[in-house]
Length: 118
Image (cartoon, rainbow, N blue to C red; front, side, top):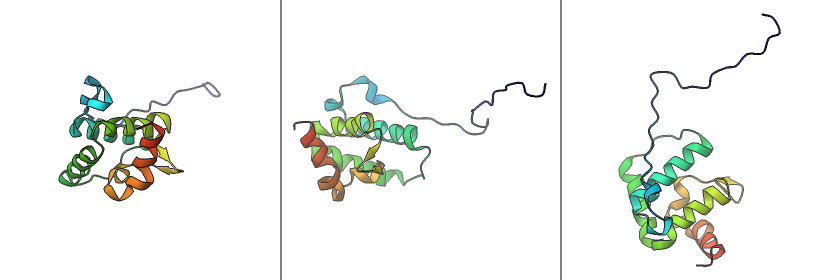
């Protein structure tokens, strides 16, 4: 019928399957393992910024193991702040896994930890 409203379904094609782990939901952010931190960040990046280029899993794992080791109980709260308080943007730039590398600590993690009162 001309002029009648219609809806367009926003579903992915049948051959596309998006699977994101959610193990981080089981514990408080301060208690997250590096795997839970990784799962949360990867899911939050995809939710806010869309699908991302695939990274080598060993590299991704290394980034989050290192971040969790450097920031200990602050790692999860830093990530949650970046995505839930800042909506996935830090200083006008999207937050992605590179923000969790050691080279970004002074620019990203340390200022957030200070805001959180750590």
